[in-house]
Length: 309
Ligand code: ASP
Image (cartoon, rainbow, N blue to C red):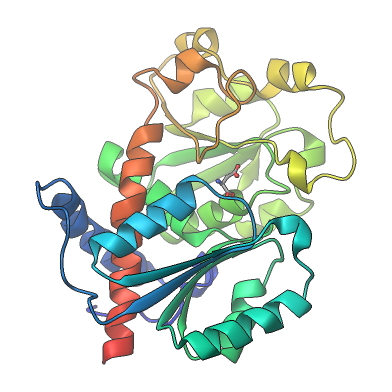
């Protein structure tokens, strides 16, 4: 396959296995580029990209911007505090702004699930979802799979446990879709209150005992508790959460094998993982960040090639 099956990246659920393969092979090339002394290619000199961030972001925004600049695209940025965003009203505003800016591609983060799908139905630009509420975060799942592939050779047949706040996590859903598409075995682990009902219907298993989950897996993807998406308390106290679902070095050392630790960031050190785990040889957290730029370059490049054709 030489081009993506989609014109937008709205979610992993719209992709096929071959799309993932093409993105990873293209990212291999860009990873080599960003490690050269001249880290830039002229590929997208005629493309204008708007980054629209209606919700806070550090890594993702920087990573997209760097990816765009490494590809020589023209970039415009728009950020809005999530508190000022009103559903519908803001998206219509967004549509009108984009139409008048005549941009080729829009990267959007928005607190409302489905916001990027809505946008793709109303503007001609290619849309990349940089996180829509608790729904999907496709580029995060792509860079996570890319990092597993880099560390363990392949994703197929590997055992991955996603630990923590599955209920409010867009990273969890996109990862489940991506890992299943590639033939990995997936479990989720967390407090029952933070596991969506019927999550097994996605073809995954639930394990509420962290020690057992870690004994089973090759890779543990540790998620942050999404306090900003919670209106009520889902567990008694942070201390209790840490005791049951936090990973520390002692716990890792007690396992019968070495496992890989991932985290999408931002880390709450001492909550989902301790500092000695985050900074240990088990952790590929900084590799994930580096790979994020290469994977985003690949996605932008492949979608831009479809605009040009
Ligand atoms: N950075 C990820 C996201 O935007 C994970 C997190 O915020 O915990 O979803």
